[in-house]
Amino acid sequence: MFIVGSSAGGFCAVIAAITEPDDLDTDMPEDAIPEANHPGEACDVQAVVNLWGGAGPWLDSLDRTDPPMILVYGSEDWLLVEGQRVRDRCEAVGAAYEWTQLDGWRHGAWDALIGGQIHPAAILDFFQRQGVLVP
Image (cartoon, rainbow, N blue to C red; front, top):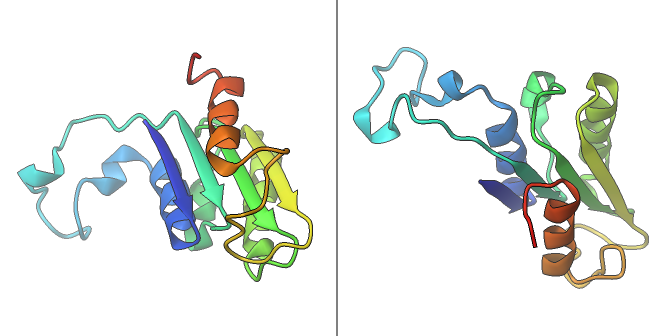
């Protein structure tokens, strides 16, 4: 499974990838585990694409065993600092990541090229570089 998200979706993608599976069994810690949440099923995230999102207070959960991430931010994005926090945490714990800063772009840089490619092509290349998608 690959998770791709932008802005708030980027937050959700990172959080889903770095949260331990048992932490997602219930909606609230004191609730019983509903069958609709499929307890015991693995959610094995292989890679994360975080387009100008963050991780908020969940960032401390990120460790080197988490899936590789590509972090994409505009240099003028108001969430750039959040992205730098995620990047710095990846660096500190030895987690696999790629950082892309889009010079002159703001939040939601959908028309920007990532490494000279449109977003879908750049994302597929990331998955291939990480070895989680074979061409």
